Image 1 (cartoon, rainbow, N blue to C red):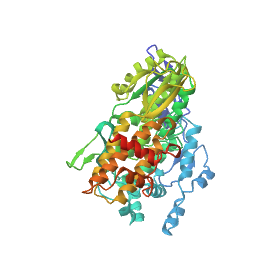
Image 2: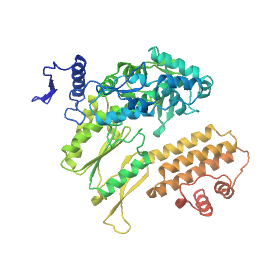
Image 3: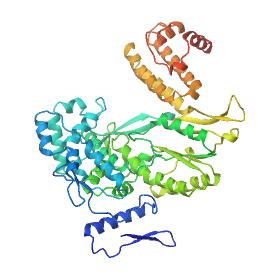
Length: 541
């Protein structure tokens, strides 16, 4: 048994009694687990590790099937895993579809749920041929290639040989993470967001490894964490849930916080410690470190940058690594504060966007004051210009301010039925609104020479995505503004591509609502063409 005590300086210390009956590996594993946890500053949290028991679930590299090591072999687990090497090889030779590895991952998840303190071994063996085939099948076919220029179609032409070769390199530990291709996408405010595009083979292995990580850590993640998680609501649904919680709750203060350059500044040493809380497989964690240390190639200047921190946005494994990091840095920490809170506390985290609502103002101020120190401990920085404490009370809607979360502005307005009662509304954030229109203008400018049919096809997809996200009942006015702005952009472009004016407002709107079949925000938010034509005519006079 491990005995933990806290001295006057609140520093966690540990003592190990005489473990004569325990194996050397068990004593080593137990000590290492407690040491790393104390470094995380989470002593007393729900995931504190006691003495770790020898064996539970392991996957042998030489024979990739589930084995439960509790003193005997679980043959039923083997049957559920369905990963007998002879059978899978025989099936591949006959071009018979291989069996899924989902049963293995389910077994990992079930074990992780049952034993919150267990550290998994032999995970590297789960990166088998079945996993590689399934990962390849899940990749987007039209994704941009990496530094080697290999596309999905290229790789598929000789798929069996390519995957067999990839598996051989993984088993022999000769696999090397290739350079990541640097790319940029526009952000709000005219800035550019850097992306790192891995090669196709890297994507395959990353996808297989991320499935393993998800199976383990999903059992530990907070119910208040939403971004990049299967089975969890998307960003729009999370924003609407927050609106409902604040409307029905008794919260009066909100802290909006933004982490500065989170993906670029994530500390590799801390991430390794966090992974080791659940993983005792140096081959598996070593593979992750290879991806973290992979050089980033900028094709424009043909220069390679070797990162000392961060993980490239665009990598398939980056989202799960980000969630693991923020789980330890923020989620567990905020949940501890919620348990000690004298008032009510509610928080939501979507990726690196965090909102915390309080009923007690002094607890809200304490959280905001402590947050920079908490982030600094893990080599992160608070974007102070984007972080603030906001008075947000439905009983004092005149004295309340708005805050922003997931592209929406949240604010109180008086109810039409009762002016003393406030209604919480969501509206497209102004910066997001302007950035989206700027992106639309740049896209039209870049594709102005394309045939009209192709332009309209892409426009339908863009507008459909925008409507699907921002169409909420309280956002009608902003959606209408966006549609009218898009009208002007498209109308102007169509008349510029020809030497003479091709359309009047009347003919343009007739095509827009007729044969062009441009999607509208929602049926209940559609406006008649005649009314729009009148409004647009008045706006341009």
